Every structure is written in C-alpha cells, then in structure tokens.
Length: 133
Image 1 (cartoon, rainbow, N blue to C red):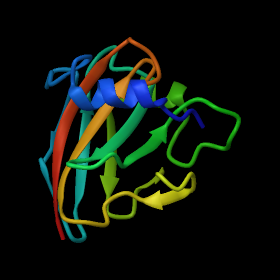
Image 2 (image 1 turned 135 degrees about the vertical axis):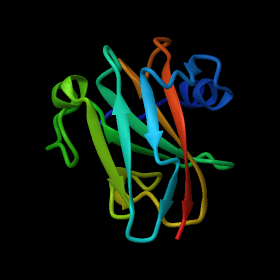
Image 3 (image 1 turned 135 degrees about the horizontal axis):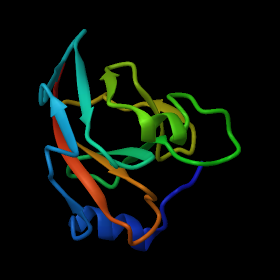
C-alpha cells in the first residue's frame, strides 16, 4: 500500500489541501459509539483513496490505497464508485506500525481524508468523527 511521505503528511495535517465539503464527504453521524457505525456519505468525484488520522497525533491509518496488496476494505476503483462506506470500531487500516491495525482504539477526534491521490498535491476532502467508546 502507498504510504505518505513526511512532507505530504505535514501538508495534510496542516489542512492546506484538504477541505470540509459536506456535499463531497460527510460523516454521519459525527460520533462513533461502542457497537455503532459511521456512514461516510460520498458525493460525485470524491476520489479513490481513504485514510484516517487520529487527531492530535501523527498516527495515520490507510484504508483504501493503490498497491499490489490484497485490499482489506475495498479497491480504489470500488471506493471511487461508492456512494456510501461504513466504518465501525473494528475497521482496519494500515497503521503506523506498517501492519493492519484497528483504527478506533482511543477516544477522541479522528479526521477522515479522501482524495484522488493521497500522496500528491491533489488535495481532497475531510470530515471528523468523534470516537466515544
């Protein structure tokens, strides 16, 4: 899977290239509780890649990215065509360790990023999930 470089992670953290545009990406509801789910409502041309950053940290979890590995959530092509995607406490992403990890392990704010190409200047859209187990 593609891993963001330090410069691109810093740019995404600063939010310069990512915007909150609910017509393109909305987290509904904005709170994930124990046993619950959040639906990502995806608008037209929302992009083919999905990652989540744990707020206040440099921890990124890559959920949909291109690469030779077998997709664990869905392929970039399927994500680009999707109108909805569901996240739960059990959702996995390629985490800081380089392995698949549960994303929602600590209470707090998580920022969902979608883009045509995360590791670029393409930018993208964000929404926020508050995890309250």
